[in-house]
Image (cartoon, rainbow, N blue to C red):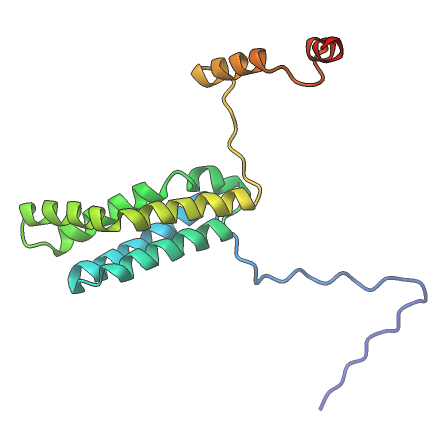
Length: 172
Protein backbone atom coordinates (compact mmCIF):
# COMPACT_ATOMS: atom_id res chain seq x y z
CA UNK A 1 0.00 0.00 0.00
CA UNK A 2 1.43 3.35 -1.02
CA UNK A 3 0.96 6.39 1.15
CA UNK A 4 1.65 9.92 0.13
CA UNK A 5 2.44 12.72 2.45
CA UNK A 6 1.44 16.30 1.94
CA UNK A 7 4.01 18.88 2.87
CA UNK A 8 3.18 20.74 6.06
CA UNK A 9 1.74 24.24 5.71
CA UNK A 10 3.55 27.20 7.03
CA UNK A 11 1.98 28.82 10.08
CA UNK A 12 -0.51 31.59 9.28
CA UNK A 13 -1.31 30.50 5.72
CA UNK A 14 -4.77 29.63 4.58
CA UNK A 15 -5.66 26.26 3.15
CA UNK A 16 -6.42 26.21 -0.57
CA UNK A 17 -10.07 27.04 -1.35
CA UNK A 18 -12.39 24.12 -1.88
CA UNK A 19 -14.06 23.71 -5.22
CA UNK A 20 -17.73 24.57 -5.25
CA UNK A 21 -19.96 21.53 -5.49
CA UNK A 22 -21.32 20.91 -8.94
CA UNK A 23 -24.56 19.39 -7.63
CA UNK A 24 -26.51 22.59 -8.23
CA UNK A 25 -28.20 22.51 -11.64
CA UNK A 26 -28.82 25.79 -13.46
CA UNK A 27 -30.75 25.91 -16.72
CA UNK A 28 -30.65 28.63 -19.32
CA UNK A 29 -33.95 30.02 -20.59
CA UNK A 30 -33.83 27.84 -23.69
CA UNK A 31 -32.83 24.77 -21.71
CA UNK A 32 -35.74 25.35 -19.34
CA UNK A 33 -38.17 25.61 -22.26
CA UNK A 34 -36.85 22.44 -23.85
CA UNK A 35 -37.09 20.61 -20.50
CA UNK A 36 -40.62 21.89 -19.93
CA UNK A 37 -41.64 20.85 -23.44
CA UNK A 38 -40.12 17.37 -23.25
CA UNK A 39 -41.69 16.54 -19.89
CA UNK A 40 -45.07 17.98 -20.87
CA UNK A 41 -45.05 16.32 -24.27
CA UNK A 42 -44.22 12.91 -22.81
CA UNK A 43 -47.00 13.30 -20.24
CA UNK A 44 -49.47 14.37 -22.92
CA UNK A 45 -48.40 11.51 -25.17
CA UNK A 46 -48.96 8.98 -22.39
CA UNK A 47 -52.29 10.60 -21.54
CA UNK A 48 -53.44 10.52 -25.18
CA UNK A 49 -52.54 6.85 -25.50
CA UNK A 50 -53.90 5.66 -22.14
CA UNK A 51 -56.51 8.25 -21.11
CA UNK A 52 -54.70 9.26 -17.90
CA UNK A 53 -55.19 13.00 -18.28
CA UNK A 54 -54.38 13.66 -14.62
CA UNK A 55 -50.85 12.31 -15.18
CA UNK A 56 -50.19 14.81 -17.98
CA UNK A 57 -51.59 17.68 -15.94
CA UNK A 58 -49.59 16.81 -12.84
CA UNK A 59 -46.39 16.38 -14.86
CA UNK A 60 -46.93 19.76 -16.49
CA UNK A 61 -47.45 21.51 -13.18
CA UNK A 62 -44.47 19.83 -11.52
CA UNK A 63 -42.24 20.61 -14.48
CA UNK A 64 -43.35 24.27 -14.38
CA UNK A 65 -42.24 24.47 -10.76
CA UNK A 66 -38.99 22.63 -11.33
CA UNK A 67 -37.84 24.59 -14.35
CA UNK A 68 -38.73 27.89 -12.66
CA UNK A 69 -36.69 26.89 -9.63
CA UNK A 70 -33.63 25.71 -11.56
CA UNK A 71 -33.51 28.38 -14.27
CA UNK A 72 -30.85 31.09 -14.14
CA UNK A 73 -32.18 34.54 -13.41
CA UNK A 74 -31.16 35.67 -16.90
CA UNK A 75 -33.54 33.12 -18.45
CA UNK A 76 -36.59 33.95 -16.36
CA UNK A 77 -37.95 36.53 -18.77
CA UNK A 78 -38.33 33.91 -21.47
CA UNK A 79 -39.61 31.24 -19.13
CA UNK A 80 -42.49 33.07 -17.45
CA UNK A 81 -44.39 33.68 -20.69
CA UNK A 82 -44.02 30.26 -22.30
CA UNK A 83 -45.80 27.56 -20.21
CA UNK A 84 -49.18 28.02 -21.97
CA UNK A 85 -47.50 27.97 -25.39
CA UNK A 86 -45.46 24.89 -24.53
CA UNK A 87 -48.59 23.09 -23.34
CA UNK A 88 -50.51 24.07 -26.49
CA UNK A 89 -47.76 22.85 -28.82
CA UNK A 90 -47.33 19.64 -26.82
CA UNK A 91 -51.09 19.00 -26.93
CA UNK A 92 -51.28 19.54 -30.68
CA UNK A 93 -48.33 17.25 -31.38
CA UNK A 94 -49.50 14.50 -29.02
CA UNK A 95 -53.02 14.45 -30.48
CA UNK A 96 -51.81 14.56 -34.08
CA UNK A 97 -49.52 11.60 -33.38
CA UNK A 98 -52.08 9.47 -31.51
CA UNK A 99 -55.43 10.37 -33.15
CA UNK A 100 -56.92 8.27 -35.92
CA UNK A 101 -58.01 11.20 -38.10
CA UNK A 102 -57.85 14.96 -38.50
CA UNK A 103 -61.28 15.67 -37.03
CA UNK A 104 -60.66 13.36 -34.10
CA UNK A 105 -57.32 15.07 -33.47
CA UNK A 106 -58.95 18.52 -33.57
CA UNK A 107 -61.69 17.39 -31.21
CA UNK A 108 -59.19 15.87 -28.78
CA UNK A 109 -57.05 19.02 -28.82
CA UNK A 110 -60.01 21.12 -27.69
CA UNK A 111 -61.12 18.53 -25.13
CA UNK A 112 -57.60 18.26 -23.68
CA UNK A 113 -57.21 22.04 -23.48
CA UNK A 114 -60.63 22.40 -21.86
CA UNK A 115 -60.01 19.70 -19.27
CA UNK A 116 -56.49 20.89 -18.50
CA UNK A 117 -57.32 24.63 -18.24
CA UNK A 118 -57.22 24.78 -14.40
CA UNK A 119 -53.92 22.91 -14.35
CA UNK A 120 -52.57 25.12 -17.10
CA UNK A 121 -53.42 28.29 -15.19
CA UNK A 122 -52.08 26.85 -11.95
CA UNK A 123 -48.79 25.82 -13.58
CA UNK A 124 -48.37 29.25 -15.13
CA UNK A 125 -49.15 30.94 -11.80
CA UNK A 126 -46.68 28.63 -10.06
CA UNK A 127 -43.98 29.60 -12.56
CA UNK A 128 -44.68 33.30 -11.96
CA UNK A 129 -44.76 32.88 -8.17
CA UNK A 130 -41.42 31.07 -8.10
CA UNK A 131 -39.89 33.62 -10.49
CA UNK A 132 -41.08 36.52 -8.30
CA UNK A 133 -39.88 34.69 -5.20
CA UNK A 134 -36.42 34.29 -6.70
CA UNK A 135 -36.23 38.02 -7.36
CA UNK A 136 -37.32 38.33 -10.98
CA UNK A 137 -39.13 41.57 -11.76
CA UNK A 138 -40.47 42.51 -15.19
CA UNK A 139 -38.76 45.47 -16.80
CA UNK A 140 -40.84 48.35 -18.06
CA UNK A 141 -40.20 49.52 -21.60
CA UNK A 142 -38.83 53.02 -22.12
CA UNK A 143 -40.97 53.65 -25.18
CA UNK A 144 -44.48 53.04 -26.44
CA UNK A 145 -47.81 52.95 -24.59
CA UNK A 146 -46.35 51.48 -21.39
CA UNK A 147 -43.91 54.38 -21.06
CA UNK A 148 -46.73 56.86 -21.71
CA UNK A 149 -48.83 55.26 -19.00
CA UNK A 150 -45.90 55.33 -16.60
CA UNK A 151 -45.39 59.05 -17.29
CA UNK A 152 -49.09 59.76 -16.67
CA UNK A 153 -49.02 57.88 -13.36
CA UNK A 154 -45.85 59.69 -12.34
CA UNK A 155 -47.55 63.03 -13.03
CA UNK A 156 -50.63 62.08 -11.00
CA UNK A 157 -48.75 60.72 -7.99
CA UNK A 158 -45.36 62.39 -7.65
CA UNK A 159 -42.72 60.73 -5.55
CA UNK A 160 -41.95 61.88 -2.03
CA UNK A 161 -38.67 63.37 -3.18
CA UNK A 162 -40.47 65.71 -5.56
CA UNK A 163 -40.54 69.32 -4.37
CA UNK A 164 -44.21 69.73 -5.35
CA UNK A 165 -45.18 66.82 -3.10
CA UNK A 166 -43.18 68.20 -0.20
CA UNK A 167 -44.68 71.70 -0.53
CA UNK A 168 -48.23 70.32 -0.75
CA UNK A 169 -47.66 68.15 2.28
CA UNK A 170 -46.17 70.97 4.36
CA UNK A 171 -48.85 73.47 3.31
CA UNK A 172 -51.78 71.14 3.91
